[in-house]
Length: 340
Ligand code: CTP
Image (cartoon, rainbow, N blue to C red; front, side):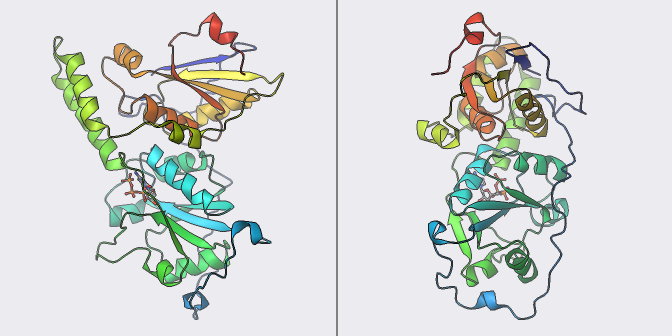
């Protein structure tokens, strides 16, 4: 695990002693957290026999600024092995309304529609709740937008639009999981982020370990580099980093807390430690180690490269600023760093 920690003002360690277990032997810590504030009652209010939302929906929902009440949008998903593609989908969804409600699909529904998830419901809830664009979370959401569930979204959660990426989302029988929302005129689409998917990440993990087992002392580092280049299609643009950033410096006299690490395969343990770190001050600065340093320390490269890991950290609601490619050791210069 590569996670160092420092509170600038008191050098106090932040590790809070929760239950952490090794995740595939890589990428640091994992924690299971009970999210007590989450609503579990989405099955309430079901069953309107007559469905007025199927009447043509000819733009009755005015634009954000013209409305008396906030525009509420809903996006669902499995959010397994959470990555910056998921975060970017939720960021775009939030821009289509004022409040974003996220349905996290149940383990059973994922098994029935896609095959078993890697992460548990609790872990996926922690990850989704930790994103800066998410206002509310509905656990154990269904995979398909059924009439019953759509009615619940409209009547109980006051949802105006249901949103999904522009990739087809098909049920095992080949039908569209969002067909009813589309028919009701309450569906909106965002652009899927190229270059990353949960399947791709599982592939990278398998490749890394396949490679690690077969590595020999002479060929190791070179092959790792080649493998990384082949697997990642991500283009790190400055615009994307800006979209994920808060863009704010600490206010004068603010207590700045610094924490660093690899933050590879951003997971529930990372959310928890960042939350704990943020509670120690007014501004959380996170150092993300570069790929080379991680490879030298571990003997194999990170699964996600530096810019991907940076986006994962920036998407977390507890993070204010990131040092992209932070040194492994905290230097005097860093401690004296003045934010401009
Ligand atoms: N999504 C996206 N870009 C990606 C991956 C997912 O915009 N690279 C969007 C999906 O379109 C969906 C939401 O994120 O609206 C949740 O996706 P999810 O149900 O978790 O799974 P998949 O679409 O299958 O994506 P993945 O295989 O990466 O989990």
